[in-house]
Length: 241
Image 1: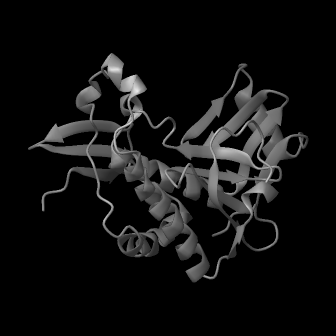
Image 2: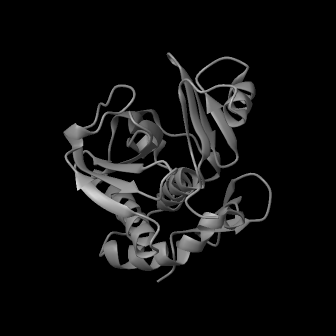
C-alpha cells in the first residue's frame, strides 16, 4: 500500500511540505538531536499495535492551498483523530517500559488546568518520573478525538492537537502525529517550559518559544533559567540525559 504522507527529519532547516508522485512529503527539523529520541523506536512499536485499524490521511491543503470557506464549519470524520490518542498512549507506554516513570489514570476532575477548558474530558493520565522532573499530564478529550499534553500543578498546556478539528485547519495525520511527538519530547526535556504572569505567558517549544504578548519573552526565559525569576515558572529536570 502506498503511503498517503511521509515525514522526513532533516538535520537543519525549516519545516516544508511538497507533493511527489501523489505522496505528501513533509520535512521537519530532526528530533533525533534530543536525548528523548531514544524512545522513538519503542513509541513506534507500541503505536503500530495500539492504532489497530485507524488510518492515516493526507493533508487536504497541500502546497499551502487555502481552505474553502465552508470547511471552517465542517468536521469530516472526527473519529479519525483518535489516531492521535493512540500515539499519546504509545508515548506513555514507552516511557513506563523504559523505566523512566509510572503512569496513573486519574479522575479528570481531579486535575486542575490553567485556563478555561472547553472540551469534555474522556481520559486523563499522569506520568511521574524521578524527583525533580515535572509530571506529564495527558488528557484525551471529546471522546478521545483531542490530545492535550501539559506539565505543572496547576497544569500548563504545552499543546492541544488537533488545535481546532474543523476541516479547514486539518493538516493531515503525518503533521499532527509529529506535533504530538514534539509535545512529549518537549515535556521530557525539562528545563524552563512555561513562564506566566497573569494573562501573559511564554511557552517553550523545541525550536524556540511562543508568547501571548510583549517583546521580552526571551528575557523571561533567560531570567527563569538563571533563577532570577521564580514566580509563575514551570521548570524541571530532564527525564533523560
